[in-house]
Image (cartoon, rainbow, N blue to C red; front, side):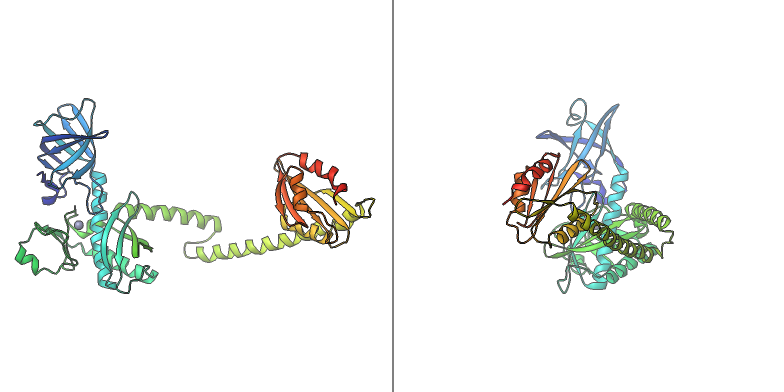
Length: 404
Ligand SMILES: [Zn+2]
């Protein structure tokens, strides 16, 4: 069994140890040590990474796992295979990564404690993600979301307790003492139960890596809650991650404020006003385009070709930018009896087609549009299509006089 140095002191970032065994699994070589400060994946916290050194040789530790017998295994890569069994190595943790995990993990204890105190919600598990961490919670009323006011209260309490800078302590009480301790939840192991306490308000069994004082968590930011597998999933950031998030949000808000000439507090109101104005403008523009489109109607009807059977054929290539305006024009046109309208709007190298007919004309315009080679469809009296070249449009002009 590997002596797990992080249990006695989570701040150990380098150590000396002896190699006790090798194991090859797939493309990974694992190596166990008689003692290690590398934390093996567990409790939702990823395994540590870092380096092993001997003389001028360096091996990268990419992952750390623990087996059922308590042996800690390190996935190592190096130019000439792993260091031999029995040899002595010096271990160095990737400390920035581990410290970040300690901030997320210790912060989770604090958040779970505040959540329990304010709502009675019971936290099951932690997951430390690359960017965001989450806990899954069962609420007393089985709700799967928290209101913003509750999130604000939990966050405010957690950040207040951070400023109190209470000690975080871990120890192994004997069974008799353990039975009398006010643990927030029952331990998941039976023997060698390690109890972690935070100030006088939080106590829970945990084998993880913790900071020494709540002040080292720095900052807690709750991002939100959502349902997940019937429970409530709470997303959060602690420490350096929360600070980096604040910096990113601050930059985005400042830039948005510059664009809208608004201070941070005025920003939501100013943005909502700008969106309302944009919507008004969009509607006004639509109405103007429709008006402009409909103004072409008398001219197009005048130019209509009269077929031998008396029907009239309107063929027009237009420059409308607005599909609803084009549809309004076609709609007005086919209110006249005995009329077939073929409209084409070339745009960005594509030929957009709108074929329509009066109710008293029999031809199926959806079928007609496809018979030209264009892609499209619609109703028998009102169809739309598009083509990558002008051939379908040219074919339609030739075929239209012969429509049934
Ligand atoms: Zn813990």
